Figure 1: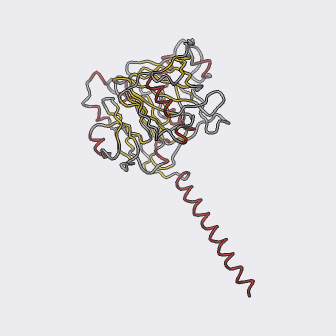
Figure 2: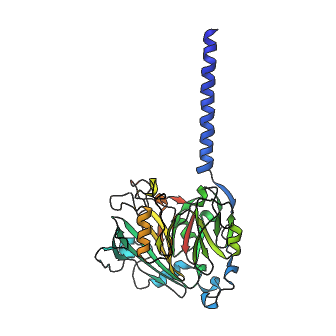
Figure 3: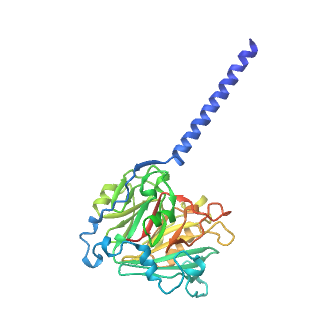
Length: 357
């Protein structure tokens, strides 16, 4: 009898532990793995935001003017020989020019500027030039983009679906949308809060008071705000075309905005990074740095901010980084995405920022 009494507490503890482990596993899967689609037709765009824009900013009916961006890119590269799928090193680089290392305004970052340039893209509405830089032993890819209208700075969800944990590689989502250029977005699907406004449509109005929100307006200008300052509906009413909730702000009014409190832990560590910035009217920089490899160390937030400041941006914003950091251009991934540094492989993400029709 005494032996049976001793076994009961033991069995209860084992059972309780197993149930707790199972519940914890389910919660983790539900939070980080199990896809939950909330809107499976999330490719719509609120182009009415552009109706009051000056006519010179628009190019007419996109559907008839040039709907297939991939064909446009191929036409633009006519005479370069070789298909759009040849290797990035042999196909896309033009003659490289090596400049002497320079220091930015803070004197703390060593930059070898414009040492490799990729084949450019240009049409009546979109101009893209992609260059490689070396910043603090890190390879950084900078896409210089000039547009006739902010309507060509678009976003897309993985599988055309808004929801939690719905993901796909940046390149897959870019190809599905005929993107000329694309970078990973803010990985909204890994969080339950933070404004999500994409292509002029509000998907999530739950804010996060401690998060900088990047707003891209229909007239093309950038503002960085906080969800405690304005509601998501206010932003829509004011003409916000895209809103991202990741951050932090990197540059405000031409000055580095990264604070000491933001430069802690992983933020201070050297990692792959993704960012977007504005130079002036409809002139943008999309930036991705490699990291976590012997060839490319990675950047801290401060280093990224200082580098973007050196390029002349007035406002810059940090997007999801690490293994998510990916740049896709002219039909291929041109950087080296990695999560651990042991293998070069794209991470599946919930959304992208892209240039296209």
